[in-house]
Length: 239
Image (cartoon, rainbow, N blue to C red; front, top):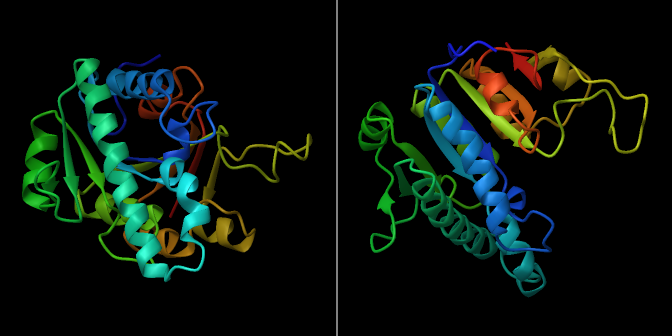
């Protein structure tokens, strides 16, 4: 495997659910260490890494309580869940020997810096992992959209969408054994085939900003490093 990275600065989108492991909700310690160890591998290659984290692993435990709430209120609760996940990621990174900083789109100065683009870029240039929490800071927008926004703002070379499946398939591989993985596909083809790469707002923003996406399996050993090296891993969604 080539040790020369194809991408110098990347935005990694992690779902909150990816932190659960086999648990019903919350943060599984072994799982979060496994994920941060993969990221450490590419940081050690000299790649600058920004992360956007979701909050589903925490918020799903409160979902029943959120029924009947205004959407905006529920969304703000979800944003706060992402801050909890970001703090857990930061601690896990530092256990791995990787310096990390958390920036929140909601002001929570006691626990995280408020998002500031110049400072975030400075941290990336210093080799620190920057974890963006609280989505865009606005209700009605998903963390997929936050990832597209931050990826564009940070001038990232690529967005890496980590999933439980090793790419985008012609059909759900768990339901259809004949489903095959796309090695690469254009944004327009993904739209015409109705492939659910990410939500429509995020997808449109990535296409407009020419921010290509690689969808890959975060729990496949060495997958992230292979993506960074430009190997045939996951699915490249491109302009």
